[in-house]
Image (cartoon, rainbow, N blue to C red):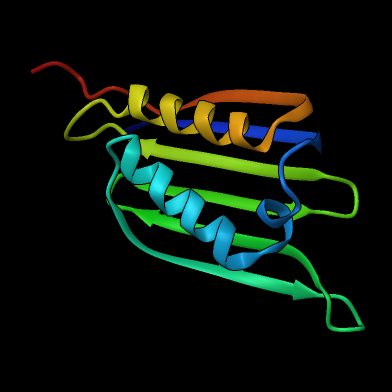
Length: 128
């Protein structure tokens, strides 16, 4: 087992409001960008939070990939977003695809500040 987990906490995103508070818009963006990066979406589940008055609030969602997943959560009130992209590298090295996806989603959200972490998961198989 070997994989790559890319994590970002993004603050004060300067993107359009619909990316932070419209489930349909954010889901389409995430699924499309996974495909554009050469990854394989198998399904997606996104949930629309609502304010007490019924107005759209944040969104949480996951795109399940054949290679693993993308997960995202938004706080439009503050412009903050958390993003996780995890890929396994069992049958092929998906690291470049994960980096491309991560970079593109971060760029589209346009945060003023980003805290990023890159975690190599598991270990490479022992040579035979």
